[in-house]
Length: 213
Image 1 (cartoon, rainbow, N blue to C red):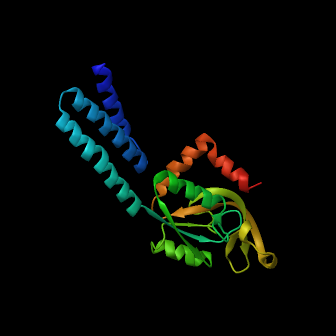
Image 2: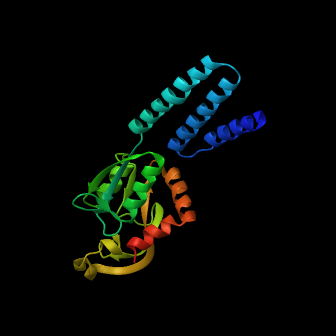
Image 3: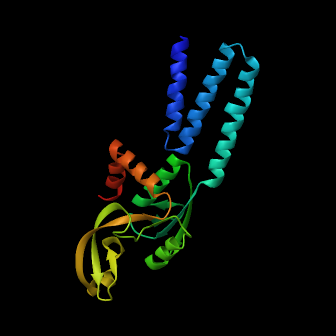
């Protein structure tokens, strides 16, 4: 029994270190501290067990949670785009919004959303690091989200299919295949890990099917 308990401590310690999501790491750390309380109590050290319970398990976990809630903000900039990132009367909707919201929920981020009038202003804000991520009317450059047709206009600009108005169609000079993307300046590796995870479990396809029917 003692050996099994020791191996359990080793396993939980390794599991805690390997966590990619900060919140999951804090929960694993709480479990490890709880197991250590049992180990100290088993070895007749009730004072150490009590200290571990009060400081190692409760106080430390409380501090970690406060830090995570206070520091982790994802600043999201977007251009209102049908199906991708739309502003509604009471909330937001769209493929990219849902993906980013679920990512923030999983990784313990709070979304700070800012709307931009056009793509140029959006990308300038990203370059200046006024936002962490740009989405809505971003094509080709960034993490690929949704395949689309990209149209080139007589003035040299390009837009994805969802951003082309009826009045603009007469100015189209060529088209090609491309992608709507989400472009990061911070947290890109975390988001790519999250995307890989939901692609493997099928949740990514569920989001795409819901909107791109």
